[in-house]
Image 1: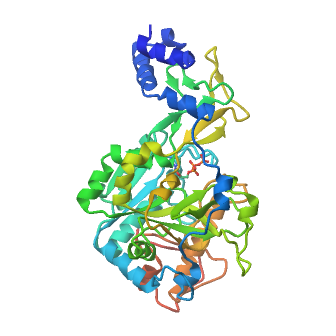
Image 2: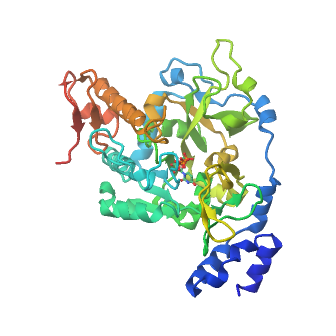
Image 3: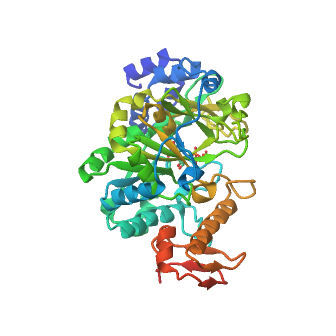
Length: 473
Ligand code: UTP
């Protein structure tokens, strides 16, 4: 018999089927299932399924929204009219000083299932680099090494996995000696999970007779996981005051970019985000907007078309700022958020989830059959004081690997084109000439950014063949 209290609780929520195969399980399997079920908040699942959770009326909110305080591209070039009154040169200096003081860390989230890409391993293990075939993990960790070399201070990496990606990620990094990042500068921590329910009945789905189907609880699970893992305490002890946040699937992120960190510090913002300018009103990017003095991201699916289409006097989009999930957080802000982490709302996704039917047979659905529940990191934004956004071009910072080859966008080939273009741009900015159509790739330890490239490449040098810039023998 299953533990009585557990059985009663599941019965009272109409979820007794989760224990239907109890008698067929070994004692180990029984205790595994019991501990998994004991951790489920049935009340929460019930209210999420019934839709009892408070959801803002985003269409109404969008109508009262204003654009966010921003450094636009023109402001960054010293030609703009930003009311923020920040100097790009001073920002670069201030950000570089924070890096040289060892006050900035990296927060990399890599817990997602990568279902669209269809790669059987954690997405970070995808060999994306056009010439070296370095994986996403290699590129990101080597940037941390390159930054430590540039600024003369270690830059710790806090890497979030999920139960789906954790073991393989840890083994892969160990096998590659963290790509040169000292062990003390890498903390891998695991986010939590949420069950999925049948979209019609609200019943919990089973992945096996002894287990529920569980999926990562969304990148909004980061805050809780940072606390559980002791990462926040470690940041405090190391004197890390800011965190540069980004997602594993984007290899061209200018990690810890001094200019961005500088704007963040000079404006005394608790949370600074990169924004890219939307090309069309309906572009599939979250929209940065202000509601009063609070920064929000309203998802494109919730943003009314007429509001999205509003124009400024000069014909540009009024709501121009698209979110690409790159932020600088104050550690003190995250600490403040610890008490708020359970209040982050859940977003519901309608997905295909394989599961056991009543007879214990595995069903592979061909249509979405389940509701998954995820928390999003951007729901923290409204809590931040003095938030700002800084406009970057997509070429500077955004080429996410989302889709399998053959799709129109965000595929491996698409991402590689951006990688090559970024490195070509750095070489040309240093005065080198790269022949048309020639692929170039820069190892982040060889040079982590355009400034470092300029120290290693003589102006006037011509590259007429495919070239990998690397110190590796
Ligand atoms: P996405 O929402 O794009 O998901 O995550 P994904 O896993 O990359 O791909 P799909 O949607 O299954 O095809 C954006 C980023 O957030 C991280 C992912 O690892 C990726 O870096 N993420 C997502 C988490 O860390 N945890 C989550 O629960 C969800």
